[in-house]
Length: 145
Image (cartoon, rainbow, N blue to C red; front, side, top):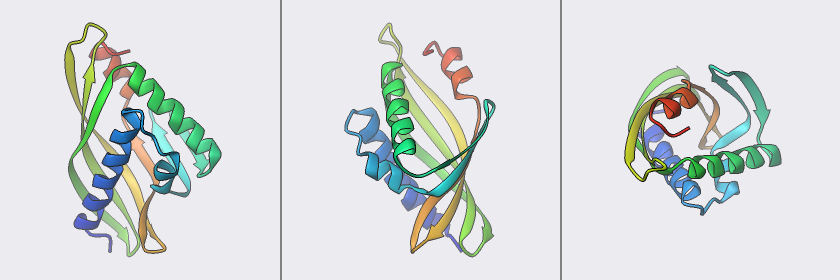
């Protein structure tokens, strides 16, 4: 089984990679290293499937650039809970806290959660999917988009 401790360790590493990326120090190989060979993304905008490779790296690079442009400063993993699926798969519910700076320089913190589908592959945890709320609506609500 994937333990809570294993998932917390994984998401602390994920958090560091994310923080580096929004600081402009993105290592796309590190970003891609968190994901399985294929994945599914479920958001209010729809369901998307993809493969880990150059296309994922390009999408992630553009995403981090967009986050920086709208004022993203820091992302913190606050809490992780784990629901096992089987020996090598689980759902990890992650509580995130994002710190942003609006155009007028005022700070805002947005707390949100994402459900990640994790698998243990070759001894390492990898994301093979995620289910997230409407981040664009939250950004608009808080004057960021």
